[in-house]
Image (cartoon, rainbow, N blue to C red):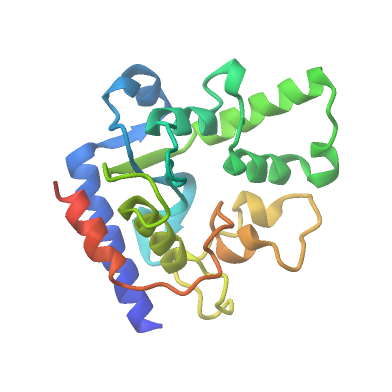
Length: 224
């Protein structure tokens, strides 16, 4: 576990470099300066109250993501973040698994399945408010779209490194706080609840093994 701890520490040091180079973003900054975002990249979300173990002034990453994974995809970095934030009435939650998991945790799976227009709009607004309380760091990565892209390599490597899915409670590194939404949601937890077990608002990649080499790519991109 010490090796994983050391790699995690290096990961967060790289993110600190990225924050110094590209800034710490929140929803207000996104609304006012979205046009300054790079065309492509990887994002790392932080959630209020979620801190690294033994690092009281360091928030832990709760969500990692990118875009343009499929060859020929035209989605932009800005549009992907806009979907997560619910910043457009015409695109609220469209294609955002992040929003789906937050919504399920806020309302419980059964309640989330109510589909009247009024209830749906109200609940989407609540999910938007919750996600808009978060901040994020970005790392520009402008290579070609595809599953072998550096963007995808950084995303999956980061998720696998940060995930506690395979670890016992005693082995977990930077585990979620006892007040983390997914741990105290009213929905009935499934045995294979990837979000709950990993401590991330991610599913894809949380049960994978990680290869430390992705950190070299991340460091190169974050240092530009």
